[in-house]
Length: 601
Image (cartoon, rainbow, N blue to C red):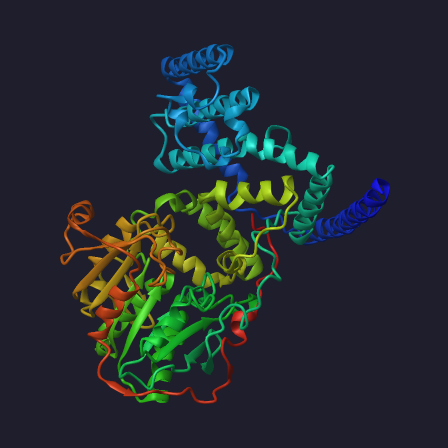
């Protein structure tokens, strides 16, 4: 009987092993073909550039050698830490949390959650050795005293990438969870992980395209972006979607949403419970959203002016023609908010400011003087490299920017998936937010170059009349439109203090709200979620720190707070507006176009 039970199990294991070897063979063949294809095309562009990183470390080395006394002090501290760690490891019963008391290495680290990291003396020694070395390495990177600010930023940032990469959790032999799973599966997990990494390399033609989620896990228009509506207008840059009402009456003034073009609009229309668009429709708004095109080389010469006039301005005209409404409330998310602000300034310069009666800015920067860790990627040399690359392609792949954004949270967005997909041999869990994050878009070469140089590098938007767009000099100081600014406390893309300074550039009344969590989760926070909370204050004080100290903590989502604010600008109730037959059902064609393959680590 025992042999009979083992037979089928052994057969299934053999079958799975055979399938993994087949996957490995097929992926290896695709990888070889992809690398050959890249060699023929000469497409070896990487961002950030390893040569620039190497040069920054050369300058660090020279700086440290110029101050040998400080370098010797750092080395002596490392020796002392090593000696203390070795002494602790020799004392029975010291391993684990007790040995960490009073140590900087004792800060909670989610990478070391497996019990063996504390209970097994060898694992505990490896863990504490790594944390000690990581801490001292970062301290050394910060010790240089005469580096240029950008060089110092690069050194510190990439040193963190280095020490994160060297974590013992990222290696099969020093990660107890990986060893356990390999034993449990008879090595199948490692074989499956090898197949996974080869397939990801093949998908990127030799550059690692790390999957956060199965690209076939969701269907746009069915699982995501499923709020009913119609595409009622389109041009070469965008489709305008009008959503079907769910209330008998609606607010008089429609609501126009301007999403970022670096990502797709359906971050605001995930599933039914998370969809901000579906929720706004249920509050009685006639909701319109811009769905940006995913451009190719044919739009290489498209300008920022074109995005303004063929985006929000064209949408305002279409809404007026479709509904008869001369005025709207508008919402801009991230760089969509930046475009909304420039639209307001452009309208003000032409005496048309009343076309938008209120503006909501979600995690939006207008003052780019402090962009957080993104500053490590912003300098003339790196932008020039991107421009040279875009000259060849006609556009900038969103995957390249996604790679840079992932580095900002490398342990979560890179190494966590390296462990799950490759070392543990598991498939990533279906997650709508990460599916959206990986559904990249491209940016036209000319527009992206203008955007990076004029806003991020030179910060000209905050200067009165420093920019001319579509024939008009713009000045944010002349925008008197009432504004609602939502920022999030843990935002690593649009740091809240920068968005706070941005809010003070406008001349009209501003309600500033600081939500919890980050750039996406803090925005997509349904009113019944009970998560995060937010802070408010009735004055926009000069100092953001003073505002934070005086602000009142509110529980739950910011959505109801915005609803109460925007209703004061939405007008009376009128009969619900049903979308015209239009061009096609929502979410339309544009949002379904996938970007070309490329590295997406």
